[in-house]
Amino acid sequence: MNTDLVVVVNASKEAADAPLGGIQKAVIAQLAALRAGGAEVVLLSAARRCADAAIAMGCEVHYDPRWHNAVAPLVVPSLVGVLIRIRRRWPVALLHHSGRTWLWTHVVFAGIPNIAVLHREVVRPYRFFRRWLALSPGYADELKAGEGRGRKLAWAPNCLMSGEPLERTGPLQGQRSPAGSFVMGFVGRASAGKGLDVLLQALRGVRERGLDVRLELAGTVDPWVFEAAERYGVADAVATLGWFEDMQPFFARIDCLVLPSEKESFGLVLIEAMEVGLPVIATACNGPRSIVEDGETGFLVPIGNLDRLIAAIEQLVVSPDLARCFGEKGRERVALRYTPQAASGVLIAALGQLGAEFKTLRAG
Image 1: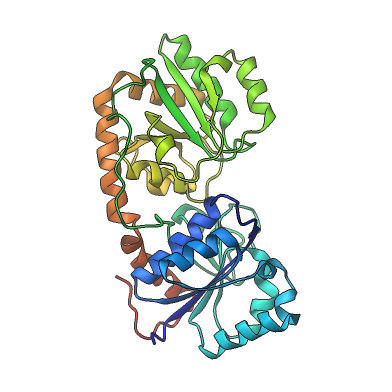
Image 2: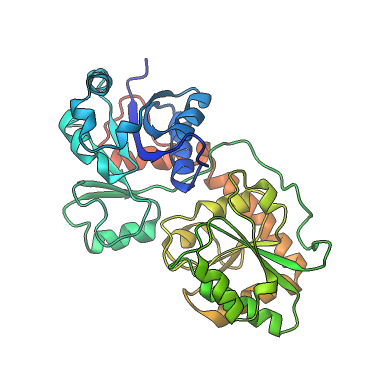
């Protein structure tokens, strides 16, 4: 048996029929990257769908909704038994995708690196952890300059859940929908901090320039978005399509993806869109800055800068060749950096920086 065992703890408690959200996809992708690098992995999951996906990959999985609880794993005999058996195998590290697992993992796995994976950019992330794994170099630098003092800190990117390349099923870049519109897409929870207000204003701006542009939203949309669309006079150009677990049908509908967030720890949807050849526009916050090459695979615009966002959208609308070029180069970048095989070496090296003592593995 491979002695380099990594335990991944996913404490997100979700129903069996819940769709795979961003964190769940990140957990599965991290398992894939670790396995691609040759590590043995164990998943402790409170989310049924995530557990099922990991089992389908061939991972060892222990599913129980009580992994979500901060105390139950210390007092429920069946859970304690699982932890003791894993402890005897002496993992090289535990990766936490939630802060609520701090207590029981530090009690049972004292002396083994317990590492918090930082999915959100907050001022004091998971302050009880002494080891942090950021998802972008920019956020890692911010933490080193502030709250990261006295902690071990490294970064490694998210990646795709599979190394099998996807092909875009919709029209080639530069073609339009049957109605002739250029369709922008947004994916995620359309809430405060995601930049939807600025994007709606940008939609108004490009339409005032005589460009036939529409916006389609995939995900959960707060009521204020509809009110803002009415206020800016673009309600007739905005469509809400609900949640997509498989993004392929949504990506087939759009001509570019726009992610105008004020903060973004990584931006998994960017690499999902680039994988199928979509050009992307994103704000230059930490995550997107590490993914998008401005002017090569898409556009990076300053956070909240309406004029620059309008200009970026207009360039893609009027230049199908540019959009196609961005899409092609984006696919190449994803293949080089963001498949599980490509990301595995960076992840294993980062875990080594955080104290994981690999006996047989080396960063690729």
